[in-house]
Image 1 (tube, rainbow, N blue to C red):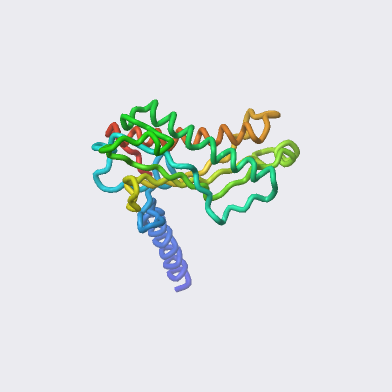
Image 2: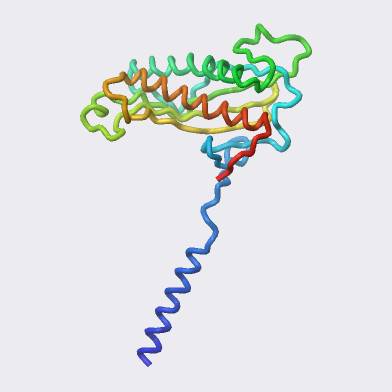
Length: 215
C-alpha cells in the first residue's frame, strides 16, 4: 500500500512538472499608455504599430523637441546638465538617421520648414528614466556598475493628432566593456546613439516591408 502511494505521488509530481513545462510561455504582449498594446521585437523592447501603418502616404516627418517625464528628477546639477544635453542631441540624431534611411522624403526638426499641403507625421520622444552614472562606481566597482542609463519612449502620430500610429519604448545602459577611462558623458552619448539607431532601424524595416521579428 505504501509503495502504491509512493508511486502515485511520483506520478503526480511528474504530471505537474510536465504541465508546468507545457504551459503557455510568458506573453510578449504588454499593455501600454493611451490604450495601445506593446509587443517585443528583436530591435525594440516594446513596440506598437497601428494596423496597416508603414509610413506610406506621408511625405514629411517632424521630429519634435525631446520631452522629459515629470517623474525624472536629476540628483544634482551635473545630472541636470547631462539630461539637457540628451534632450538636445536626440532630435538631431533621430533626424539624421531618419533622413539617411529615406523612410519619408523629408525629415524636419522645426515647424518652420513645413510646406502647405504636406502630409506630416510628428515624432515625440520622451525620456522616462535617466541616470548620468557614476565614474567612481564604474572605476572602483566595475562590471557595469555606475553606467549611464536612459529609458525612452517614442510616439509617431499625424501632425496635431493624439492617435498614435507607432509607439515604442526602449532603454540603454552604457556598454562597460572596452570603455576604459572614457567619460560618462561620452558613454552616455554612445548610448543615446544606440537608442536612436535601434528605433530608426525598426522604422526602416517597417517602411520597407521587411519581416519584423516579434519575440
